[in-house]
Length: 77
Image (tube, rainbow, N blue to C red):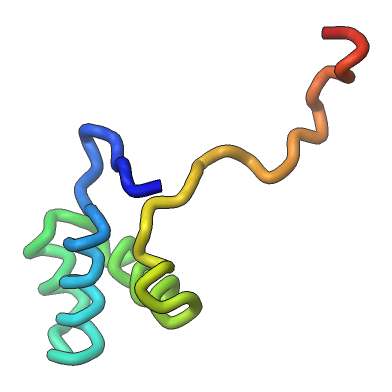
């Protein structure tokens, strides 16, 4: 799913730049966050996802929940 919503601050390309600046160029996370207009938490999130899944971890993911425990049973819908 590579279709970020219209207000997304980052795209997979920008996320790759973030990771490159953090890991390869060793720029401070605070500077990276300021440059891209995002929080330091977001920078750390993309670094962690890259370390876990590589380039694939930088793609947009679905925000749909994995489970809906309070969902109404299908026979009632």
